[in-house]
Length: 360
Ligand code: UD1
Ligand code: UDP
Image (cartoon, rainbow, N blue to C red; front, side):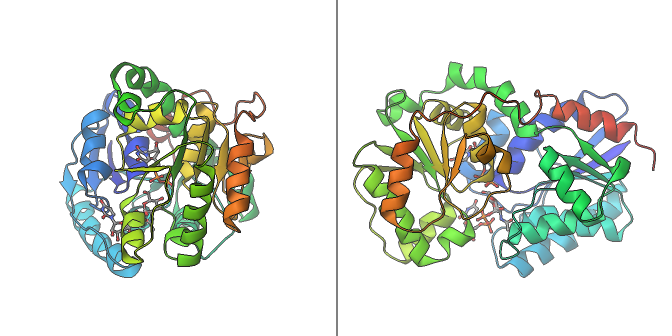
């Protein structure tokens, strides 16, 4: 059996790291890895392949950045060429990026069955490019690997149910479990940054809704600046956000320690030693919970509603700097319930088993 996997953006490298390992342990199965090139800086891509020992891509399409249509369109044509040559039995896609959508469309048109990892997530906000990508992908996938029960219900509400929907847990939980010990052994990021355990907060910002709307970006930076008067904040800055800050010539408030994006092992160390995490990232919201750190989400809604329900995550919205700072500070020490939300770290194994035994 031959499976083509599509990756392109940072969170997909983390997800593919665990699933690719499980795939390549399976006899009679060959994975062909396509990197679309959506993310390409060393800190956003190459470093993940090296540190997480992800097999080198068989194809790097080098698509790079661009407007949604142009970027997705370039990927679509190039992925189609690879699929025509490789003739795989399956297409495996992750999450909700433009790389996901391009892989999905290319495969669907060639009648190659699609397995979607992280299916059924919904923000119910169609302004988000990710929401469009995930809805489209779910509706043409053969197997939908749902990470949560909420995702299963979301799919059922759109008429997708039955044997094609498989609740497997979250592959990011597998990754956090697998790499935590290695992170503890190898990362010296706290020392490098001059930070002590539980004496700083960690923040990330990259969502288009926060970076492309200047008023929101200003509120977030000012809010983090206020919070940083009480607790220093480490902010590994996504290139999208760096460009937005530079373009608008925004001043970085004192107390915010801006650094380049870090590798996944350093990120684990930063996350689990933070006293609180403020983020608009999907993956980082979950990782805060994996490492049992309270999280404040800098968005108006989240797909990971079980984190809010169990008290690990507080939805902040982006209303005023004061409100944002208050919520960050007051969240320190506010742990949620002791619940198991994302499976036991076996999602990758379950995914591989289901694909290899699937009967259409
Ligand atoms: C993409 C995904 C988003 C995901 C995020 C993970 C889409 C629509 N969005 O958003 O769902 O949460 O990845 O990080 O697919 N850039 C660089 N170097 C890089 C990559 C990007 O400088 O290596 C800059 C470019 O200016 C680019 C901008 O970041 O235009 C945005 O990159 P893009 O991949 O389009 O979207 P992300 O915001 O990264
Ligand atoms: N991440 C990382 N370094 C960073 C920021 C994030 O390794 O500087 C990791 C993070 O631990 C998580 C993934 O990247 O595993 C999340 O990616 P991102 O926030 O870019 O995207 P999202 O999950 O929102 O789609």
